[in-house]
Image (cartoon, rainbow, N blue to C red; front, side, top):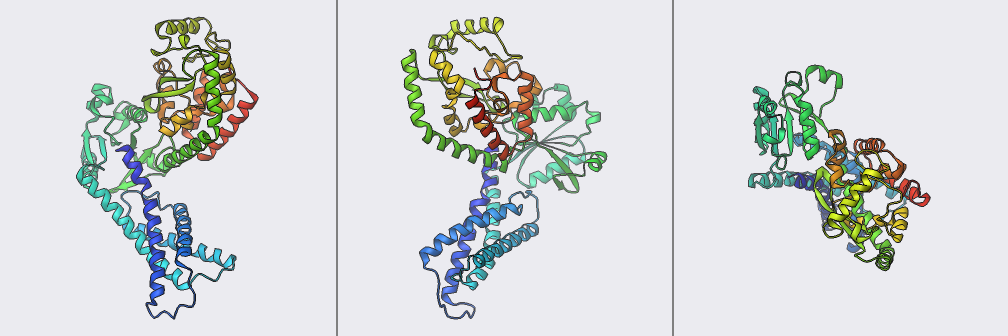
Length: 470
């Protein structure tokens, strides 16, 4: 459900584009037919040119729609509010379009077509949204698009919220806070894989910190968390995300990488990785040949690493160590693991669960150069295409490092791991483990696309200066 929810978050964009384009096409046809007592046509753009122009107009209008906040609506917002936003979005878009035409001193575009497109645009976009909502509801009835919620609380408020979401065709389960406190493990009563949202309605003061325990559980498993605030909290915060039957619900988001933020980052990652692979493919081929000439074994090193929420994936790197000294069943096996343990005990130059060593005897000649230039990380561009990693994010830890994380350190697994991150851009291997965690958590809490671009630029500088690389 979590992935399908993201798809339905994005769907209004192509639907709006089609509706706007359809409105302009119908406006052209109506003008050509001289309906509504319109005067005879003196000149109209050729159909092919009109198609190309209106496809660009539809794209620009969708961008304007985004700035009006039409894609950040709550599920329970009224239709009147939606119609007002569509009216405003279409009107602003048409006004800007006319201003652009005036500035370019173009007179070829019919004013009647623009007027028709305005009216049809409002109607078509509104109908498109109704069809989108009907599609969601139909899929929910069929069991494909149902949201699974857990309401933690007792009393009338919990039952009232549960009834509200059931009317929205959600699958709702009510859990008594006392039962959760008795087990002391939310996972014993809550199926993390199937749950999309947890709503806490109890009084945290009387439930011995259960609210914080639920927040940590939600962060670990990528579950949305909302709670009903007390009157004191509501007055001090003066903020709520939605109101259901007169009850305000606040949502705690550990990162901005949700909804549209997640969509934008995925598009940025996919396009960046695709372009980089095309441009750097000759470099990667040469590196693979040099690795094969330098030492026996495959040019690519594949290792299981924990990713977002601890889910393991195949992590790719250019091999920088001798094959028989590399850890993993397909490589050095038990002997390599024993050597790593010895080096970790006597030669580790990092703090915490990290292992870093400047003169690691396991590294090949070409491997030292690859690590200093960070070119050994290039195959991770394919991890980004697969969706297991991002261009920017916390670096994926080793399995044994991840096993040593405490609750605070585990928060860095809230997002996809990255090829580079604030840690690498700020000092790379020279940073301590404590600084490493602080930087990653700062990134998670303050993510923006502009921050990603800044980190990429700083990483390029760090690579060229070879600061902290070994």
